Length: 115
Length: 109
Figure (cartoon, each protein chain N blue to C red):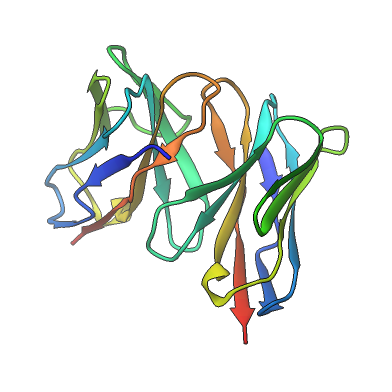
């Protein structure tokens, strides 16, 4: 299957700082990338959908000013958690697909801990 | 709204067969996918059903009944490494994938 790389795998940051997470499709061009958040022992909750070259579409209840998403190229999307707080601590996972109606492949996830 | 229901936990013996059910209520439906996730890891794709019926991939099979809004994942010849969480996910549009609550499978010797 296709490879999606997410970086960093773990990050610890101080409350009030910002953290950037990168998601790269390594062997295909991803027209669409998705960002999920997963709390312990819970399901993956879709945060936003980003299409290359356009603004991300955020799910209801997700603050677009807090979770900044940029999809500047067909192989890279970034999620920036701005002014992070302890309640933002979670497992963030990206996925990417090559085109509509194709399977999505997941990155390895980023464990964010805000102290 | 969207909802996908799965059992929260299942325990089965090594070598046995286990079935994980998924019922869904979504505003759109393109197909049902299944993902496996080990603790601390990312989900990995297992199977996809776009049409009614059974799809078989090695030890794993997945079934869909669109009229019943129901599907299941069948795992045969269970191995210890199969202990993980399993999620059903509905593709509600060309780009949207909505995940179920997840089933934690524990395989015991």
